Length: 488
Image 1: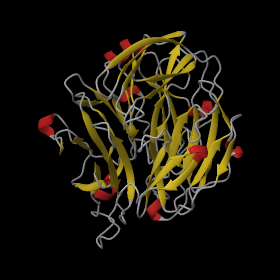
Image 2: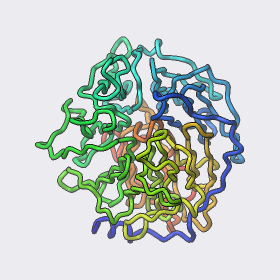
Image 3: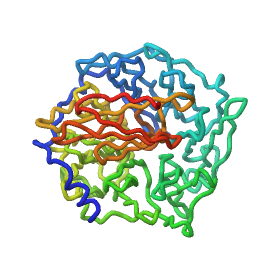
């Protein structure tokens, strides 16, 4: 807590409490639906699919078709024709072929699909052309990373093995690594699997690239735990590596450096406690003290005292005061009697002392549908992070951030030559705040957008980038703009 306090005292207090306007009625009606195979997931992918520098939306539908919504500015969205895709649990954007247009890895109950992006938000099925596997597994997690200038390595997490006659309990499926080769991608099994619901490839507390896997204890019942796989060594970390076993009902992953030491803290959502792990100087993690305010164990409005169920989590500076806040999508799996039924979403605002305070009700985003996926993104280009929420058996929600007297801001977008066009793995530092460019995490969905930094009262920013190859560039920028940087 001392490190958090010292770091956050450098930030500037926002001028007003966060406030959002509900624009959900402006969206076409879309509901993530389906039976037990769609109790989990329901993710959204947010990225620019037409090159106009505004975030567009791709939302999974479960049994219903997916939907693609093009940002037409003025905080309105128009549906774009899309090939019929059902059985979808979520999607992640990445530029797999480095042509400047975002592609989509689509997770499904059944064979996954890789959609190739093209101008004007046009997508085509490139699964076979790119040599990607087809299997009848239940895909629920995804992440990607680059180790050279070619195509990415990818990991796909699978939930329950639907073909196992002893399922669903004790029937967790294995996970899959997709490794580029001359024919496209080859498959490698990553085992054991404990019913993965989220994956994130990023630098760990040691500063090394690792694959974090969050698993659902509801189905592995016993013997499972959260996993960390060292990508270079090709093995899971254990107690001898300082990786303490933690077992929870893992749903989503979010990461952000909250202490200013260059190491990301990691939030893991769950049933009951939402666990924030603080990166330590020795390369290990320690659970945050309960007083930090992020555990969000029970509903913060209403009279339902049963434990909450967390899904998508995302850090973002909602009021641009220079401190990362935290949104958590909440909702009962379906009708689980031991968990809260009317379970409001959380908007946890970080304070100057490093603690977090609940503000969702006052901000107007404490809805109680069965929320799943979500995204904090600047949909209207005003420098304030807006909010999109996907619900099970209820329509999408869209909120415009109208918080008054917010601080200055800077968004940073990276490009570089070669296969890793968007510089995944780069570290960007703005006035002491560090973010890594990643693909993965969240709950069945992610964003491919410029990194957003709140600056408080500061109107100029010092910006440094450590590119994936280790080259470092530095410079300065005025605030309140999108800064486009290309590797020299």
